[in-house]
Amino acid sequence: MDSSDVPQIKVITLPDILRPETPACSVRFYRHQAADAPVRSMISFTANAVSLVICGRKRLQQGSHSLELPAGGGLLFRRGQCLSTDIAVAGKPYRSLLAFFGDDELTAFRKRYNVPAGTARVRDDFARFTISPQLSALRDVLADGPVNPADFSPAMRTVKLEELLLLILEANGPAAFDLFNAPVAPAPDARLRCVMDAHWQNGLSQEELAFLCHMSLSTFKRRFQAVYDMSPGQWLHRRRLDYAAHLLKVERRKASDIYFDVGFATLSSFTQSFKSHYGVTPKAYQTSIPSPRLRGEG
Image 1: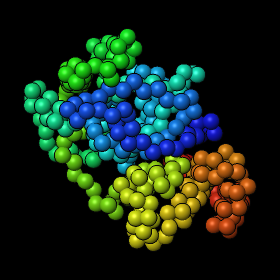
Image 2 (image 1 turned 30 degrees about the horizontal axis):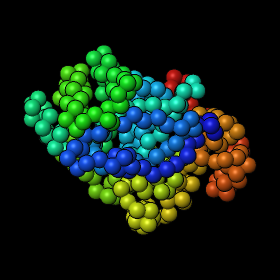
Image 3 (image 1 turned 180 degrees about the horizontal axis):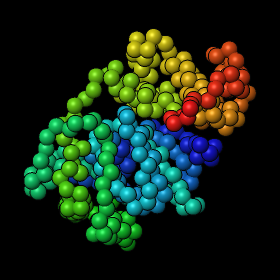
Image 4 (image 1 turned 180 degrees about the vertical axis):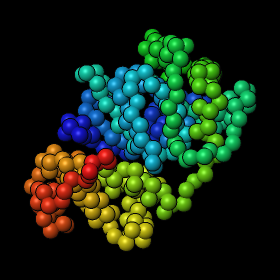
């Protein structure tokens, strides 16, 4: 990871941080533009949402699910939590169009267009969809037109939301809306293990890991100790050193090439930690163990 790509971190609740809206209409549009520097946000969605990426890239992490979406991509969000990073590309700021809507609007849409609702097989809070030329054209009007859709009347916002959802349905089929089916929520300890296995290598803070587990930091630390019989810091340290040993032994990579990838700021701090854990330096560890024999070798 390039140091210039390491984001700042902030906490956001959407759409609550946007300008106040009358209770009569839960449909809201927002033309979003991010700062030049990447910012990783812990986002709690209090409404469902459509996100259409116009410029830059969006990186998302949640549970065992991670993805990176380029310009021209689209996402559906259900109410929930995720980590989101907006990344500028080629000197141009990240831009997207967001449309927020409540469960009532979603229920009315599914009923009108016969979109079935069942039980979700996987608990995900976001899913990508394909953007058709028609949807792309509507996005461009709403994102760059002379009138900001945030200023539309409640009735017009509701009409434009239905148009968006209908174009998503026509291009992707009913499965695009499976995200909104009743989820089977994993047990807290199962979610904790899932989050740790998926994201231990992503440089997340303990606060962010707790957020993905839907726990406070204190609860996360307490449950982690009960599940793993060690602190999160100790577990992450061991997991990174075990991964480093794999890179040295199996992939035959140099310590100078891997220390940052396994979560250390400097080669010297990595070497010191590795020697403290394994009893030898990374170089000595690598040279003392023969390369694994490939299939077909005698």
